[in-house]
Length: 195
Length: 195
DNA sequence: GTCTATATTACGATAGAC
DNA sequence: GTCTATCGTAATATAGAC
Image (cartoon, rainbow over all chains, first blue to last red):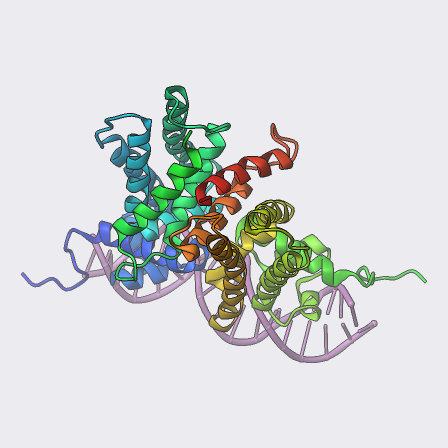
């Protein structure tokens, strides 16, 4: 029953997405060819079109998948305590989730320009959903008197920008462990918004 | 004395750089062709090579020029007072300088991947120089007892990430003026690092 | 499901006329 | 300094064999 061509392994689809994720993150969507992706997977370029209608859909599905995972992961956490406790949970969650997926995070922020308008609108809406989660936490904290934040929407964007910045320098096995990094950033976030 | 070809205006060089800056920021370096840049300038593609040896040099000179302007602009400001006063000046300077050059800022952060290794090293060194300016301010403030910052290097990167994030949402003519935005971010920065 | 082969289009860069 | 024309290469996507 030896097969004469290809892997026929049944997992080519995920391998295509993995290869595209890594190559898009490393070189950028526009700079990566379908032939390169196929080469990583070990098939010819034409075979990719069994798994994606075109290159644009490949990018879009990676970005949408990432954002939906992000929202589902946060919404799946138990959210107990006052706004201060939930903000700490959010801070630690954001750093941890993003540090575990550097390629997907990179693509989600850098390749928005390369989405078609309709796909861009979808991904942007998901990103806004995530920002709104944090904004709601901050607003609740202001109402509870534990935070002093004049502009919760802006503070939410500022905090997310700061936390996402961890990905530009953090490397596992470096001087600081991830829990130590979380503690440093939580200290800054807490002081920046506390009443 | 009518001219029969091209503009012969003597300012084609700057117009090439301006067009490249705008197009690279909008669509990404890899997605922009020399023909597109030429079309924006109003010349044929071959004429661009009177102003740049190749496409890579065009990108590199834009990024290097931006980073050198940034450092020169900060170093050119009078730096008086204690660390708190200088940190406020830095915060307001960073927001203002970056908000005035959204395309160059975008390129400087997004197109690092598309630099050749040697060019990348040059731009990275300039970026580190800028981070070190802020780190020195924070460390001085710790020594003076006005700041409490356990990791000045990390805090510097966190503050820069937060401030640069303004560019993702700020638009002149929006609800908030630039001085108001500066005040909001300075409030967060100050509280995040104060003793 | 993957292959080979190809249609069609576009790319960066250069040569030589004016 | 810009033009026209072109070289050599590579892109996305598709067709049809196996």
